Image (tube, rainbow, N blue to C red):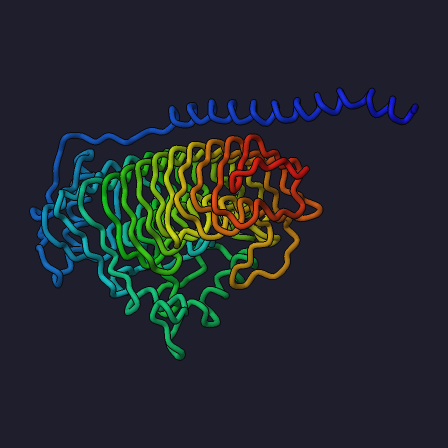
Length: 474
């Protein structure tokens, strides 16, 4: 009788402890979204003087054969030297090599304009300071590149066409489905990507990591490197060699109303890396890799730079094909904090996951404070939420830099066809995934509610899968 009296005595305390934990999680969700409003206030959208510089006036020719690189650079320099304005790309197809933006320049494509980029790697030389898969190096220039610039933009209703396909750029990834055949050169050849990773581990200075011609590391499409106040708006981007939009060590970034259609290898739609105060809104991503992938450097190089990607808002976007809708990783060595995703739609039999965090014991780093709400999902292939500390990339052995994942909140998520799992989560025993909350989540046509390992404080509040209320497992 005494035993039952003790149990009855403690039951109210257990009830209130559980209730308080639930209330704490909900309060954290509310306060998080309050912080998102402050982030938005910090983002500076660049503005430009009412001056125009038409590329035709600087020698550009509408042609798929005439290389207009010099004309673009003359127009951009004249615009910047004058104090800024718009560099106008008129209706028509204009062929070019690398375009380098300068301060206070808005590269503006009129409706019907297409910039068609050369597929000759030599047109992206000399090498510039850039990054490949989260590691800095001297490599081919991105197709559109800015280094240490302020107040820059790419706007309009035109098309940016990288012309990458199975006959150029893509085969360098060394995969048959992208045109590679045995005996062809690729990034996997000894002395290429492997040498880059080794040079970072040996702390060789980035300016001495020389690649470019003969090393087969594909360039990003658009890279703003160490830039401030950036706008990419309205354009359609197709057929990228590699990552599509890559803000790197940059701040105050707006990507608005952009359409990305590019199904090549590593064709992530937008990859903010070491970047802060980012707004990605009203965009459509239809990609061969992650739609949005937030990164902060790979392994030794990420720890050398040691800058978080933080304060990132994704709003009113549409994700179609992709390995993940909104992803953090796998390059997370510098850390990722304060990611807000809201009012998005995702739907495709070729969309693998809705929200994903991927890292491992070579990356390390802390990923925290991820808030997701008001998401409508038609079909997803593998799972709605995937948190994985054991992600395996091409060369990742077991390392000693144990990652951390904590404070993940999903609210008001409606999924018609949830794939194999609602939640897939695997943490380390010594570093469990902590504080994951799902509130008002409905997932239909899902194989299993969850498969979890080393997860602490997973709370399911008003969460239904296949019409059944799912209780919190711990």
